[in-house]
Every structure is written in structure tokens, then in C-alpha cells.
Length: 421
Image 1: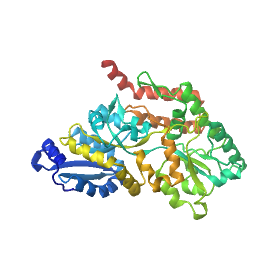
Image 2 (image 1 turned 120 degrees about the horizontal axis):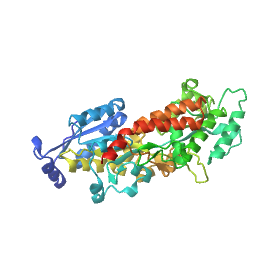
Image 3 (image 1 turned 90 degrees about the vertical axis):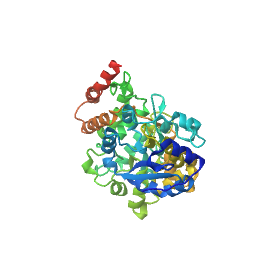
Image 4 (image 1 turned 30 degrees about the vertical axis):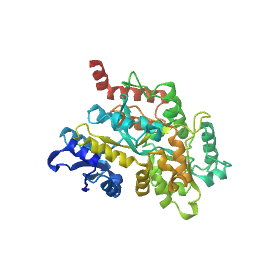
């Protein structure tokens, strides 16, 4: 898509900065992923009206192809001027030198201020003290649950501590002494549950300047032991084959609780039967202590600027525009993605929904994961470890020692690079 644009003082400055065959016109290349790429198009006509000298070429890229396409574009010196980047990918592209430091831009901006964002989300965009992205939308995990099943076991509210969580799970399990249903769904093909529990106990996951695994630490051992307990006590089904449809599983009461993200607000709303539309709910995660809510993961996507862009003033203008609370609200209405800007949450469509409100409270206590390019590889090893522990194949201490060895192997090149420096 190309958006035509026409002159203001800002546009004239941008035109001089970019130049090229377009004369005073500016041509920005913008890549966005998945549904975001399809829906951000709806916001660009207003940008055209405000900045009539900028042409924006928008390319929507499937998430399944995004990572490879970005790396290929970097290798071919063909990255766009601005693109959407999952915040766990930021360290990788920082290492490549592909991302512009936005610190001076943010300092001078009257639109973007770190105080307007959830601090844990903002932190995911800082690497080595440099601001490499501006949060576009946010993501975290909360507890989805069946309120009627909670009431059936005498629980007037969701659990707030691990002890309450475990006791509630045991009471729900006792409703089905024949083993036909469970308290929790804890999919063993997902690394998020043990990762979130580790965040809650203060685990750093890595040690020695993020060059070695630290999963055998007391903090993560505590978290992983709690995680393992759901399988040892039969509070969660073992293996993903027992639950082929999570929406049907929650509706049928095969499980009563599930940790998941904001994309499932719409899915459960569409797929739960009418009789249960008032009975499924969300809540922030329980905490290992009395400090409720417990920590969750800081996720989402950011807008980043290429170091090689010749149109950086224009890029920043587009980042500011898409970061405006009104545009954040419009983007939420189009996609269901939760706004990064706190000001956008005052919209009645967001704060008027108690299921979304749980995410707002949870986003006040989220934490970034280690900022190393190898993090996704490490999480795949954690996922494998979770699968093994669910089947109780080895003791927890042996599994975590094995995970540390695998992590050390993955980070071998990182240790070498830091030593050479």
C-alpha cells in the first residue's frame, strides 16, 4: 500500500533528510506481521492527512515467515525503514547492529514518554542501556477460569497465593474422584507456565553475565518443584493429547483453570456456549507470597527503526503517530491487541470489560526475560524438560542440571565472544 503525502515544515525537513528520486517526497518501507499488518492499514489514511509528504509502503508478513524474512533482509541490506518486532527478538537484532537507538528521539518527543507505558514492558526494549524499540501493543499471561466450578468448591474469588492455588486445585480434583477431570490445564508443549513461575520466585535463569544456565538455582528449583506438583498430585493431565480442544475442555469442565494470553479473550467469547458466557473469567496470577498479583511475562511487539534508514525523521513521525493513545485505541478495536499506552486503557471498550481489567492489573507486575539472542533456543529446552517432568521420568534436580548443561552449550559462543572482547 502506498500513502500519498504533501508539504508541511516537518515534511520538508524529512524530505531533505531522505532525498532520493522522490525529490521532496519521502517513501517509507514498513513491515508489520500477521493480523497487525492487515489492520494497521486502516490507520494510515489519517497519517496521510497529517503528513501529506510521506509515502508509506506497507507490507504485511505472516508471523511464520517473519523471522527468516527479517534475517534475509538484513543479510541483503534490504531491511525496511520501520518494522514490527516481537520484543523477545530485540536482543538478536541489536547484536546484528540493525536497530537505531531511539533514546534521543524519545527524550525530545512530546508524544512518547516512558512514564506512559507499563514499566516491565518498556524494559524489554532496553538493551545495554539503549532504547531500541517503542512498545506498540502488549501481551502477558493471566489465569482463565470457570467461576461456577470455583463456587462449587466454596471459593468466592480466584486464588491469590500459591498455597491458595494448590488447595483450590485439590478441592476441584476431589469433585472427580474417578480421575475424569482436573483442576488445571498445564500443557507440556508450552514453556510459559514454568517460565512464569520462575519469574515469580525471582529466578534470573542465567548467570555469569548471561553466559551460563542457572536453572538449578534455589529460586528456579522452587518454581519448578511447584510446577511438577500439579502432575505428581494428578491436578493436571499429563500430555497434550488428552486435551485436543481447550475451549471445549473448559466448557465441559475437564479442567477449571488455564494460564493463557489476551488473544484467547475473543476465542473463548466465541467458542464457549451461551450457558457459560457469564461463568468464565480471568484473574491476575497468584503469587508465591502475599504480594498479589504474582509476576508474569512481559510480552508484545514494538516498533523499531533501521540503523540504515535514510528517512529517520519520517520513521519517527510514524512511530509517534501509531503511539498516540487515540491510534492505540483504534488499533485495539481492530485487532484485539492490548494497548501499550496506559492512556488508551480508559476507553470504555477496554476498562469496561472485567476480563480485560485482569490484564491491566497483571501488566503492572511483569518482567522481561534475559536479553540474549539464544533465549528462544533455551526456552525450547525448558519445554522439553517440562515434558519429561510431567511424566516423572527423572528427579527435578537431575532434570534442571541437564537443562543447565544444555543452556551452557547453547551459550558457548556467547562466552567466547565476551572473552574476546
